[in-house]
Every structure is written in structure tokens, then in C-alpha cells.
Length: 277
Image 1 (cartoon, rainbow, N blue to C red):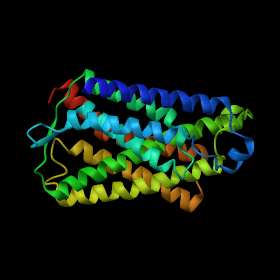
Image 2 (cartoon, rainbow, N blue to C red):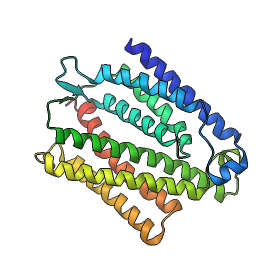
Image 3 (cartoon, helix red, strand yellow):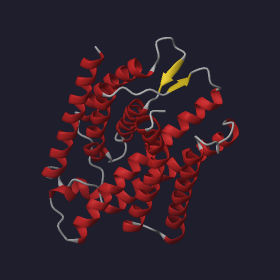
């Protein structure tokens, strides 16, 4: 049953990615819609996306929750699948009011890949469910922050492509289907601001509720997380003080996200996959 549900979710994610890609690159949206950045999400996005995330959620429940109810298996591939599921969920919710559905071109195939790997390559990292509620809150806030920064990074990639097309004065069908550059940048900084608040809360709760954030197995995560927090803090300050935008905003966003990526998945990859710890 898990294999069948996984296959169904993977197929739905791939269909969604293809449909969004076809819609974006065909330039089928009227020019007056994209010029004001208020184009509506396609009618099929929420129904198909909802079926996909519900199916994906059932698979996650089967693979992450241990039968005895004493813990969670957040191994490398399970964690990757969980985070992409959360990213898809946030994308679908935000697309109701914000023109960010085109990010699904990257996000949906990525979710299908992590789901496939989760089923093909078992991974194990048990976290006890009887941990303090404060610690569970810390983990939840950390995952939410990472997911939002992931969406922001994908938004930055799309913004970079849009900026490149406009600089070369080739506003073809691809550009016609996107909101204006100012709207894209505004959405990027809104996501970064919310993610920054969540990451700040994650660091604060970690200081209070983790026994020692600088223990040997946590020190790299802590240092890289603080470094990423500093990068995003500088970016938001630069936006407020100097009006940073365009390439500057894109570069700082990608640097911050890369550091954050290394802080979590880099350490998990080395410890769980390469060192088998």
C-alpha cells in the first residue's frame, strides 16, 4: 500500500510540474494579467495538489512514525521527504493569495524525487516522542523556517532568470507569465522576513531548551545556523537601509540558504550516509 500511494503521489507531483511548466513557458496568460501581477492560479492546482500532499502525508506517517509509538524515524531521506512535503503545503496555501505557483516547477519534481528516495533507500535516525514539548516546538519552528527559506531560494532562482531575460531584452512567453519584477522581489523579501523571524525563534528556543548547543554533534549545526541567520539579517538590513534588490538580493539569499542547507542536510548526509552514525 505504501508503494502504491508513493507512486500515486510521485505521478501527481510530476503531472503538476509538467502542467505548470507548459503554462509558464507557453506564455498563455494574457499580458494585462501578468503586468499587474494578479493572475489567478490554475483551477487544477489546488485539487491535484491537495490529493498529492494528502497521499504523501499518508506515506510519511507510515515511514516516519514507529509502530510502538515511542519515536520518529527522521533519517536523511525521511527528513528530506518531510521537508519537501511541508514546502509543497506552504506553496499551495500561499498560492491562494500570492502569485508564486510557478515555483512548483522546481518544488513538485523535487518532492517526487525525495519521495522516491525515501522508499528506495531506507534511512534511520530515531527521535523519541517523549521529549519535552519545548524541544518539539524547537524542532517544528526549525523545520518551518528551513521550508520557508527553501521557497525563498527557489523564488530567488526564478527572479534571477527573470532578471536575466529582461536585461537581455527578451521578454518572451516565459516572462509574460510572471508577475512584474517588483512584485517578485517583494514576495521574496516577505518570505525571507517570515523565515528570519522563525529562525530567530528556533535559535532562541535552542539556547533555552537544548542542553548544550555547542556539543560535538551539534556545534557545526549551531555555528552554520547562526552564520545563516547573520546573512539573512544583513540582507534584510540592506533592503531596509539601502534598498538592496536584483542581483544583490539574489546572491545574499542563495548564500544564506546554502549555509542553512549545509547546517542541516550537510551534517545529516555525512553522519548518516557516509559515516553510518
